[in-house]
Image (cartoon, rainbow, N blue to C red; front, side):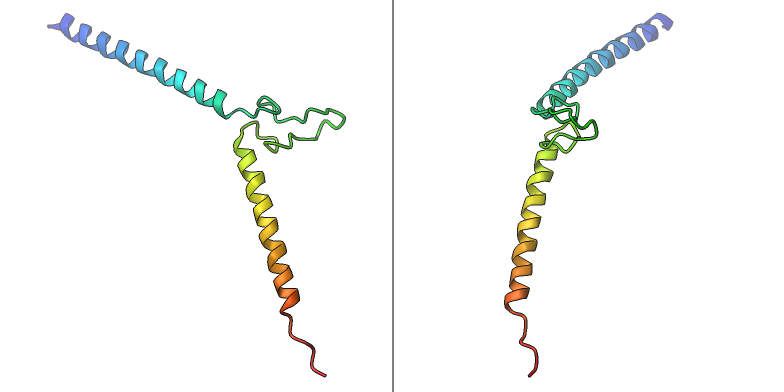
Length: 96
C-alpha cells in the first residue's frame, strides 16, 4: 500500500515537471516574440554617445509594447493639437 502511494506521488511529480518544462518553453518563445527588434531587449539606444539615451522604438522597456505606447502617444498628441486648434478657431470675439 505504501509503495503504491509513493509511485502515485512520483508519477504526479513527473507530470508536474513535464508541464512546467512546457510552460517554460512557451514563456521563452513569447519573450523572443515580444523582444524589441531595435535594441534586442537591452533598452539602450544604438548610438551610445549618451549612456542615458533609451531605445526610440521601445522607450527603454526592451519589449515591442513600447512601440504601441509610442503610437498611442503620437495619436494623443495629434488629438491634442486638433483640440487646441478648434479652441483657437471657435474662441469668441472679445466684447467691443
